[in-house]
Image (cartoon, rainbow, N blue to C red; front, side, top):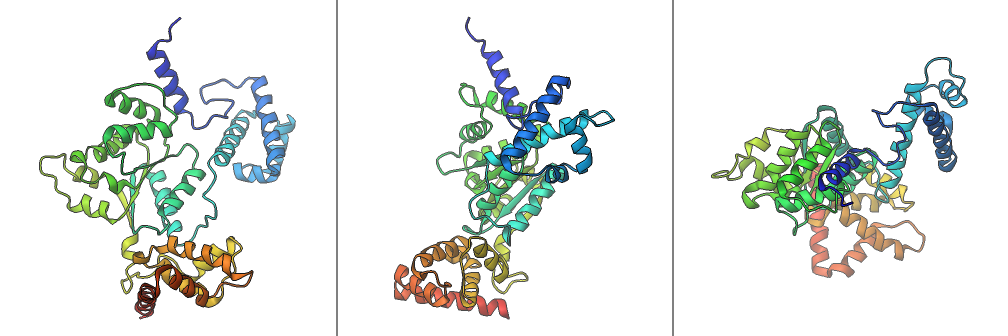
Length: 374
């Protein structure tokens, strides 16, 4: 018997609406005795596999250890259904975090803490938050870490070849595991909206500046329409171009950009923070941030190297934190187990860039350090 396209589409939507693939008892399902036993068994199996203690799991779920112990043993005097369902959701969340691990070497420092603050705000308010700043300052790595920690979060990065409405929607559908069906753009929008509506799932759009000024800004407006249709919180991130475009972009003949501007409840300007000598200049990263970042990777830095890398990580013209990480990676192979020094970092810069360009880098670093100090 041929499969009805409507039935297949409905099945696809229902599967994609799930926040995970491991929950045994959906919210609308009655909890039978057999299901309750299966949830407890799977919970115990997860604890054994992960090495986590029941006491640790209880704290994570907001339960007392004694309550959880009674539920697991079947001796809980009251109705245990809400606790069984909480255990089921908890295991689902843990498995999803394992399936979307944090980027290697990620540490919540500097910029990351501020981006996490924006994510908490939009999750609480269901609004749109915009994060913009120089390339290399850690936006993408942090967004990927947030995605890994937020069950059900959707992460989609706009690349230069996929900036049309259709391709943006297809990318989001792929992130929702909604592949395999041919649909018009309107159908695709409706199905994505149906999947996300009232779920509260976090939608993360990275490199959003690549949509600015494209095809009457239709792709930007589609993201706005998805937010309106679903009520899902959104995090948009890009370089400074997107902020200035939304504030000052030409709107003649297009849907007004203030339709988007007015929906953004929080703007995190990392570009301004990177300006040496400003009100908060040179503070993308502190020396302590740099120390913690490389200590977590078991990399030993001499004090002068910590200061050198801090100034480099705060310099948008040099690539910010990404440049500092790359430089340390090269220095690791040459340090022979000794702490990495600023002298070694300068030597690598000269070898990489040539004497003249390296001298320019040194001058910029010194100027930035002096501006911040003043």
